[in-house]
Length: 518
Image 1 (spheres, rainbow, N blue to C red):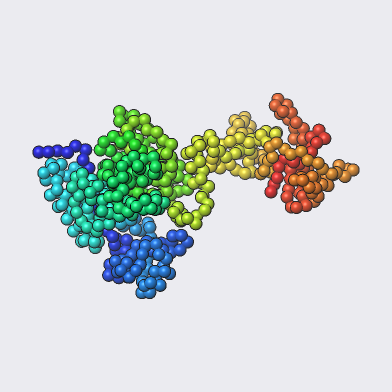
Image 2: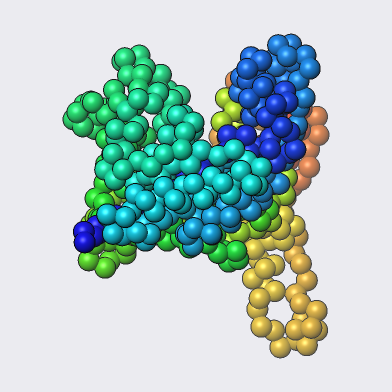
């Protein structure tokens, strides 16, 4: 007998009409599944009859109906679709305990432990392929079932060749070679660049020497080239679990020293976690990636995602951005992708691929800055009890909520243990913070003013011109900090003739502009 060590095999069932099958539409009907994309309802799936009628993915509903007036439409329900795909995935428990969904229309099972005897492996794999295809047909889905060394190769062959087959061990590159470059689903810019260089098939990409790829193309192209050459090993899938926090741990068949080679593995894990989150109606704000290194050591990093999300593309882009500055201490033998806490997802998730989306949410931007610069470099501000206005704050971790009406002094007072039983029972009274302008000038700008004989301010020379003061509030005396830079200032809140409100002060006969309320 011949036994193969560390050999992984996968069975992928791709159901091209699943997304409309589950909605009750027959392949013989002219129907499309639509979703909001780029500020319009667009086609995301279509029946074979609709495709023969000229309907293409990405078309607007108006454009599709202009081409096929009798077209029926179905609005996408992402949560229900994910739940149905999870239920379909569970059908593969008949052939393996390690299964996963491949959204939006495929499922995968790891069958590595089946028929390790190489003389009988092919027979067993063909038998499994037919069993799964028959089961899918019984459930009402036409499926193309492919067995290969890695799930990505199996998915590509099933989707683009529309056939059921068993790809012999070590023949992934040969099976992928005739497929178009689009089967790799590269980022649009990378795909366009390769086609402009005359690379139109996966075989043409694999023919390029590694030296022509490494250092010249982005990580996605480097990983795609490795896959095209059959050099990307498929990881084992996590055994199926109905409950528990989304977490995946995968052993690698052999140590991997390059992070680029792990992108496909991490991408599959991100899609799996996303499918589980969607099925459970949840989202996450942070993921944790842990690497077990050759020799037993661990390396890990936590990534903030900003606003709650379950979008696998967003999760993977954040991981890729962080890994660009991450160095492995040794080759990786296993990795874990986990979430700290899943929360109920309510509300519409923004389409991150929409080119019209110009502004990112504050939570997303701050999360990326925190990961890139560190928590000490990205902070919020909290008012403190200091006499000097420009020093009356301290940095706090970004996102900490601070009541606007309570000063730091009142907070400190409330936390003080007092012998007064009333204070102990009722707590210390809140002390309203003095009103301060949101914009402070550091250092203050020296200005000229005009005053009446009684000393009332009437005009101020600011920004190169004189402004009449139409309203004034004050004075407020601030003094103190003899131990640092002693000062004694008289502050006024002055409304100018152009509508702006300035914070002015006088000290030792000089006047200064210290801030703005506008």
